[in-house]
Image (cartoon, rainbow, N blue to C red; front, side, top):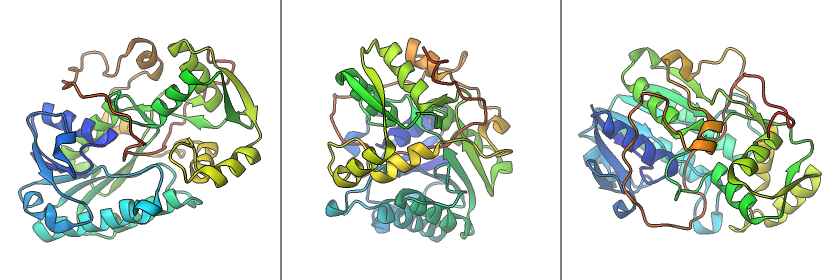
Length: 337
C-alpha cells in the first residue's frame, strides 16, 4: 500500500514510518526538513502541513494517510500554537485528502478527548477529532497513552523524566502521586496503525492504545530511578505550589511543565470502561518494565526495527502524542521498587 505519513521526523511519526516501511508498504514521509529523517527506503516529501500546496502532489499518489503531527506544549511567540498544529493542520490534511482522492485516513489523537476537555491541548485535540469525524473519509482515530521507546535522541515525556531524574538530587511528585499512567511502546502504536490500515472493520472507530502495565506516577518515578540507578530522592509537593510555578514559568522552554501539562498529568490516564483498545486487533503487548530493564521494545518473535544511526541532538519536546490508558489495576507506590 502507498501510505502518506505526516510528522515523519517526530517521535511517533518516525516510528510509524519505519514500521510501515519494514512491513513492505511504500511510504511518503512529510518533513519540513527531509535531512532530519534518518530512515532509508522511503520517499521524503519536503513540505509544510500549514501549506497544503507543498505536499498535495505527493499525497495524490498515496492510497492512505496517517496523521502523526502533534505538540505537547505551545510557544505562541514563535507561532507554534495548539490551534495551528492540531486543529488547522488536521483540517488542512483532511481537506487535502478529500481533494486528491485519498479515502483511508488514520488520525493520531489523545486519550481524554472523550471527556470534557479542560486544557487548551485537549480542546484542540477534541476539535481536531471533530474535523475528522465530520469528513467523508474512511477514518480511524487512535488515542495513545504516554508513549515510550523509539529513538533515544527524540524528546518525549518518559525521556524528559529520565533526564531530570538522572541530574536532580531530589524530584517532586504532586499531591499523593496516585494518578495513573499506562505507558505504551512506539512498537505497539505503530503496529496498531498498520493493523488498522489493513482492517476495514476499524473504519469509523476510535481506538485507545495503552500499555497493559498501569502505574501510579509515584511508582513510575521509582521504577525509572531503579532502572537508571539514579540516587534521586522523591518528595511530595503541594499541587498548588507547582501550579503557581507552572503558571509563571511554563512559557519558558527550560521549565519542564506548563499548567496544562500539570492538569493533564494529575487527571490520570485510565482507559474509559468498555473502551475499544488495540487488544481488539490482537496487537502483542510490550512490557514497560522489560523495556526499562532490558531494552526490549518489540514483543517476542517480532522482527526488530532497523535503525540508522543519528547524530546526538538536544531539542525541546518534538511533535508527538499524549496520554491514554488502561483499566488494569495500577501499581501502588509501594509496588514499584
